Length: 96
Length: 500
Image (spheres, each protein chain N blue to C red):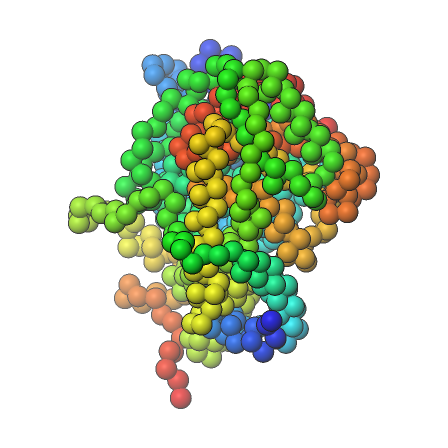
C-alpha cells in the first residue's frame, strides 16, 4: 500500500508539511483505509454511469448580471497579512 | 424553568406575552453559564448581540400581526455557518480568528424571521468526524454521560439542544453529522434532500454531498425551522426550484396503511443489542398504529462507506485548497522564507490530523493513474446505491433503520483509529450517497454495556439515548415528519431529559 515516502510526496502535492513521524503514522492509517476501499473491486460497474449530481440538475444558468456582495474594505479586513494599495502583500514567489 | 420548554411552547408563550424574548434570552444564558462549562457545546457566545436581537423581537411581538414562529426564539448555530461580524471558525486553527463579512443565506432567513442567536456551536474540524474530538476547541461531552462523546460532527448542536441550551440548532449532514449526534444525545435531527436548503455561506466540506438541517427537541419544532430555511436560493445553483410544502400540515395524520420497509442490511452483525431491541420495539409500535411492515433489501449498502471515503476526501481536498493563509485565516509563526514555505507552514500548523488524512487521501485518489481506479469507481458504485433506494421506494413508502450501530462511545476510544471512527456512520452514509432525506428521532435507551460493547460503548451501566432513522425518497421531508410525529406522540422518549 502506501509507504511513508509516498505519503510525504502526496503531502507535498497538497502543500502539507509532515514530520518523519507523521509520515509513518499517516502511511499506516491511510494504507488501512485504502485496504478497506478495495472492496469496491468486487462490484462490476462496466455498464454503470458515474454520479456526480444526485437531484438531476444540469447546466443551471442565471442572468449575467452583477450584484453587490461585500465591500472591498470588508474583504481586505479578513487577511492577516499586510495590505498595500488594496492588495495583500505576500512573500516572494520566485526566489534564487 | 423556561429553558426546559420546546420551541413551540416558547413561541406561543411569546405571542401570549407570558414572557418576553429578553427574559427568555436571559434565562438561556443563565442555563448556558451553568451547564456549558462541563459540556463544551458552545465555542462562542454572542450575549450582547442576542439581547439586541431579543429587544427587536419584543418590539415586533408588541406590534403583533403575522409573525414567524421563530420570532424571539433563542437558537444556537454550528460554527460552520458564516455569521456576519461573529467569529466563524469551523473549529479549525486555520481560521480560528476569522470574522466573516457576510452571513449564510440560512442565517439571513433566520434573522429575517427574528432569531435570537445565542452563540456558535462546537463541531469536528470542517465537519469531519463523528465525535467532535477533532475540534480545535476540544470535545463536546455527552449530556447523558460526561465520559462519552456527543457524536459528530454537529455534536455541539445536539448537546446544546439535549441540555436545554437552545430551543433549536442548525447543523450540517454530509455523512451523518446531524442524525448521528442527534441519536447519541436524544434529540430530533433532520437531514434534508440534497439541495433542499441553501449551502451558500456554509463552508463546503464535500459540495455534492453537504446538506443543512435543524436539530430540535420535537418533530414539530424541526418542521417549524425547516419551513423557514427550505427553498431555492439564487446563491446556490444546486437548490432546485421544487415547491416547499407546509411541513406542519401532515403532523397528527394517521400512519395507517403506510408501507414501512425494514432493510435487513441495517440489522446485521456489529449492532448493539440494546440498539437493535429499541428499533424492533419501535417497528412494533408502528405496526400497532396500522402501518404495514415489510422486510426489504438494499444490496449495495455495504459499499457505501468505501464510496464515501473516496468521494468525500476528493471533494474536500479541492475545497480546502483555498485555506492558504492569504485572503483570510491564520498566518504561520516565525520566519518564512518564500511563498511555498508559507503554504506548507500555514496548512501544517492550521489543520488537524483528520483533515490532513482526508486532504492526502483526496489528493491521492484524484491523482493521475488512480482517478479511474478510485474516484470514478466510487462514483459508479454511488449510482448503484442510488438505484437501491429507487427500487426499494417502489415497494415501500419509507424505511426505518438504526442511526448508529451503537450508543455514545467513550471519549478517546476511537480518536486515533480513523477506520473505527468511520464505521460509526455506516448506517447514515448510504442516505447521503443517494441524496435522500432522513430524520433521526429518539426511540429508547441503551445501557452502554450491551452486546456491542466491544466495538461501541464500553462497560458500565448508564442510560444512553438510541435514535431511529426514518428514510424517504427525495423531497419527502413532509412524509418523514408526519411518520416521525406519529411515533413521537405514541411514545415518551422525547420527554426524558439528562440529569445535569
